Image (cartoon, rainbow, N blue to C red; front, side, top):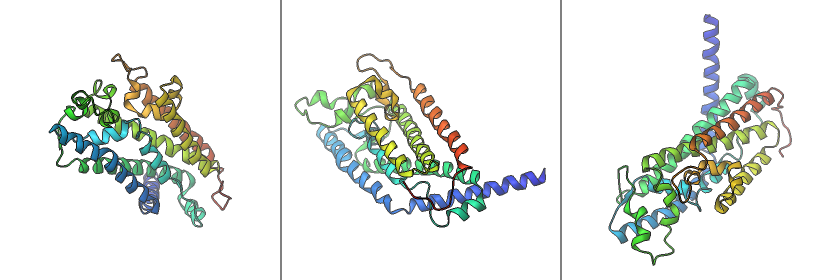
Length: 294
């Protein structure tokens, strides 16, 4: 019994070391400049627009509304998953020391370490976006579980401003069906599910020895999903992006959900678990020595 506990503690320590090393390397990756570029775009396209509408109406906007807008707007819903997919372009990492690294840790410990690393990276990524969006609203926002007049009334009060992006960032299908806290909770958790789906897809293709194909497939799923979302075709529910965009679940006229949020969580959980199961079957046969990247 004592031997089993020692072995468990040893495995946990090995897995934690894998997670810590991979996470630090991910954070220090030069590709992280893409994140800062994305946040600069968010400030220019979303936050500055919200400032303008807020000052024009003399009303503050909600502290969570910039994040909710980025996660749900027709134009920007593709931005967060696309940038994350680029940030994990070399996940899992393979270099000259990988074979020795995996030999010491064990293949299954390595696999679990990669899965946990993806969880930590997603939480960090979404948390950083949330923090950035919140800081952008300082001085212009209020804290509370109600939608601001900037979001709900601007289009009515200024119908001549047909180019106003605020009506496209957060639509009636969102604020008529959810409170801001609900919208934030669903947006954050569904984005987490989407990014975990992409990470597990990437891990699966890595073990199939086609890592670049994994990035391409993930990009195609995001791109085609966005097109079908815009066109409002029923085929959109085949793709993960529609399940991650909250207002897509709601009917445009009547207050009911064409596909429930619960079904979307089941969609993500089921497919991600399939990816993990297939990865477990592949990892034992995977050659961690040098093979040509494809």
